Length: 376
Ligand code: B12
Ligand code: SF4
Ligand code: SF4
Image (cartoon, rainbow, N blue to C red; front, side):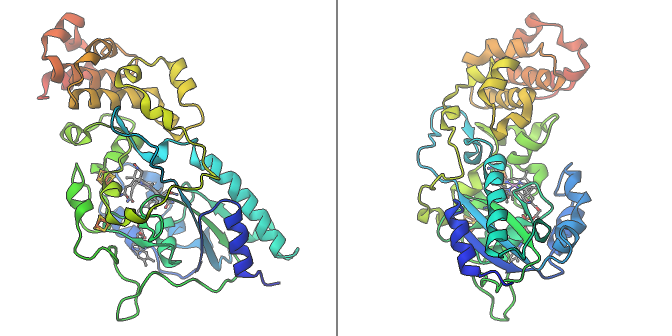
């Protein structure tokens, strides 16, 4: 039995998805991904490398996949105050979207079965939000949910850069929605389709992580360094991190397409904007218990306390936060060598070597030796 596309679209919108678009599964879509991996732009995200075949072909994820239903959730909010404390990526200031959107995807599966009137079962679809082997931005562009900007983001003409994406792969056949625009030859065009001459995002990137339009070198990206990298952050990138404590929104924020963004309905999101009120010093003084309590249920908890203390140490040094010196000196003795290393670097940058020598015999600590002897 055929599932009626518009009925499905409206029922999925009722669940809280702000955008619901349909694309037809076609082969040969992953060549850009392979090029990206071959260039080494994925840094140490070997899970990206391992899943290239699946990401390139939905039929390897769901045998017989014919359509991809792309879903968008608007997370824009003018309430997220960014001026005072360290800067957090906006997406992180909610209860973990993987969990809240996943619950709606379970409901979406039920809707698919209901609208199929018994002919559709759980074997006919699979859904993912972020963590599945699906090129979400590519399918979203194909479905016309938006276009891929020079900042590599999927940009919606309605919501700007502020959409979470989720995908339902299905064996059902749907008439596809049209992509935003095709070029004169009728092909889908390169990233930057509706960017014109603008290069604001590429110019604003603090670590020059956009080597060409639509391509992010994760090794240089602040988002990768402050979230995915679990070890030492390369010294030459630390200044560019500025006051960004978790993730980076710079290439999103500067984009003129955001002028159309309206605050999201937040049906599928639970705001945790208060996290942005934490001062740097409060963060640097977090105990494991307090870290667990404060960040419970958020995506931020995945960087663990060591990752956050590492990032906070860099921000303290970059912003000249001398009121944090006491906390930083205490961290030069932290159980994690990664925290020790960054704390030593931050103390040196803020106060020179004297304070460190007085604090502890750092020279004998192999984890911090490079930070202690290298240039700050
Ligand atoms: C790995 C990853 C990262 C890495 C690498 C980023 C990157 N640019 O590849 C790091 C850690 C750096 C990262 C950072 C961020 N990420 Co991230 N990330 C991913 C993940 C898991 C895979 C992305 C991927 O495959 N990268 C490889 C490159 C080659 O693929 P791609 O950028 O998606 O580009 C493809 C398409 O755009 C396609 N394409 C380009 N033009 C066109 C045109 C047409 C017509 C078609 C058909 C295809 C097409 O070609 C590319 C390859 O196929 C996705 C979730 C997912 N499963 O897709 C989230 C995802 C891309 N991330 C997301 C977010 C929010 C972020 C951050 C904003 C977080 C933050 N604030 O710190 C930053 C933004 C950085 C940036 N400018 O891209 C969102 C993006 C939502 C959106 N509206 O675009 C996603 C989709 C997660 C989600 N479900 O919402 N991320
Ligand atoms: S997220 Fe930040 S560091 Fe990464 S490409 Fe965008 S502006 Fe550059
Ligand atoms: S900032 Fe300009 S170049 Fe970058 S994605 Fe937006 S419109 Fe395109």
